Amino acid sequence: MSKNSNNGPSALETRDEPESDLPTGLSKPALRALARAGYIQLDQFSKLAESEVLKLHGMGPKGIDLIRRALAAKGQSFADGS
Image 1 (cartoon, rainbow, N blue to C red):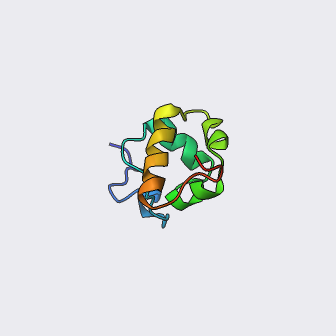
Image 2: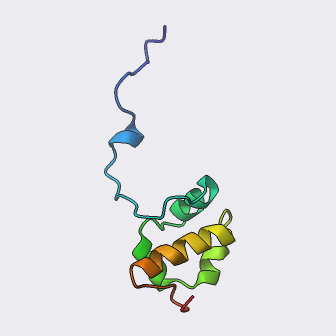
């Protein structure tokens, strides 16, 4: 048994991070790519061109489509109108 074992919440679980409202169904690689780039809120994508998001390693056509549909449901779109 290790003396350093800790049964409490980890530092990652206790940090105050803004909650994401990204669409469900995004793949884990897509979510990691977006998080690394600092994109965790759907509204952020209305300031970005679709082509910018597609450049992120881990983002593909399915992820873009999910984000596009989620934006449309809120009456928004990517900055380039897609």
